[in-house]
Image 1 (cartoon, rainbow, N blue to C red):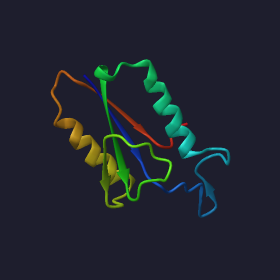
Image 2 (cartoon, rainbow, N blue to C red):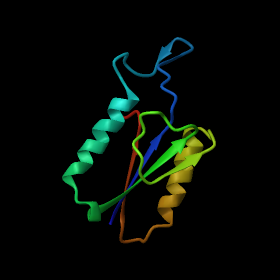
Image 3 (tube, rainbow, N blue to C red):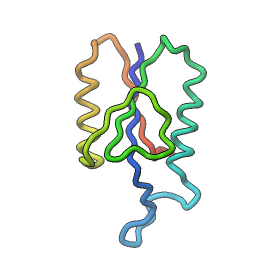
Amino acid sequence: MLHIFYRLCKSDRKKNDGFEYRPEWFSKRVCYSSFIKSLAKLHDDEYKLLTVIDGESPDWFLAGDFITLDNIGSAPSFWHTYNMALELPDEDWVYFSEDDYL
């Protein structure tokens, strides 16, 4: 079984202290939509998708299996997700993705 963990947060911060994190055209919503569309090539019985939301759910989030964390931050939410993956059977595969991969 392939287990897919998709981490996202509502914040779409593009600049901080004058440093640009992402191009102006970048959209977390488009990134997420593109990711979901890519799963159409797989059969439902081939994977399990769990979305890990750090904080409030964005209004564009498509419902499905998800957990919500209490704004714990990027690194802590990654480690939380990583530890969930460690609980899976050894013969299963794990794929991590995030809401700001270009």
